[in-house]
Image (tube, helix red, strand yellow):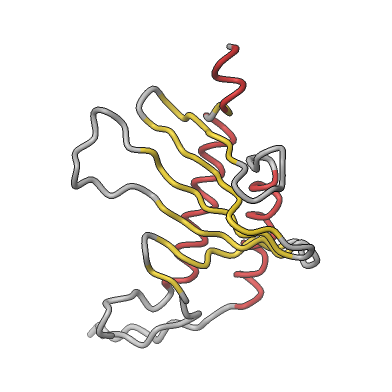
Length: 150
């Protein structure tokens, strides 16, 4: 007889750091040319899918970047658009999602069930989402300058 028992989620720090290192390298390619606060870069993936990457804070060893999906004319007002805040640690060459769609201070592991209905591996999932988003933008996206002149 099979048991429906699911073992508890085990946090894997090494795997999360590998993911953060890959995200750091990929995100470097999408940052605005200037590291100044307020600098922005748009990445268009399709006619109706546009993202904006903005430098929110810049310090010698860290940078905070906000990635927002811009509302298109065809999207429904209730559609959930991506809004991610990422902290880049330049000395360690890591990128970590610090906020995702209004959820901040993500814990490495959540007990389930929990009052906010977080997944046990919520932090890993949002960082994995960032990796997939970066891959999409790097493979299919065009930056604001490329789009204007192609």
